[in-house]
Image (cartoon, rainbow, N blue to C red; front, top):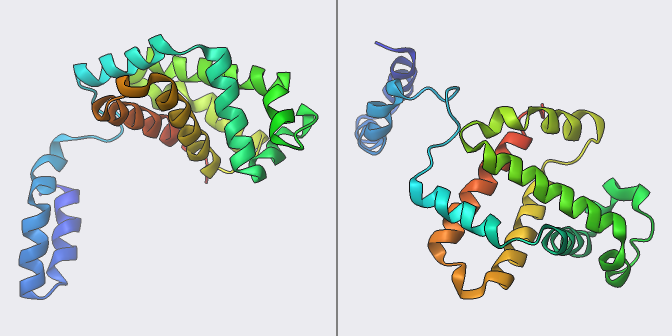
Length: 189
């Protein structure tokens, strides 16, 4: 009997008979596949369609304009994120943020970082180890901000791609960003 099964069996044994039956029925598929899956081996499985969709999104990106607009939107909509960019100069209003060359440059850096994840989709977690350490230990960035920036990036991409940003493409894109965010949060304690 493997340790995962023992721990789930111990949990379910504390439930009354009706609850135990319900718990076992809803978690049976997890119990069946769990011994075969080793979470440390891979973060996520990608289908060929998901890979193609993500690569297709990247093919449409103009890193300079999309990066600038995404980061600027994040700084305007979520003004508390500006505290991490104290050396960027004037961030007092939306116009100043949009015109700030350091915002534009860092937006491009963010997209180049995402491109590293694209090139290493089967090992994003290890690809982002150094970046995660930098953001958690040196820059002290609140990890919730990664999701805020990802949401802004998705909005900018959706606006630009319009009807080509189908629900299936969005689902693949959101999955990709979720894996990236998870990898960035890895070093946080």
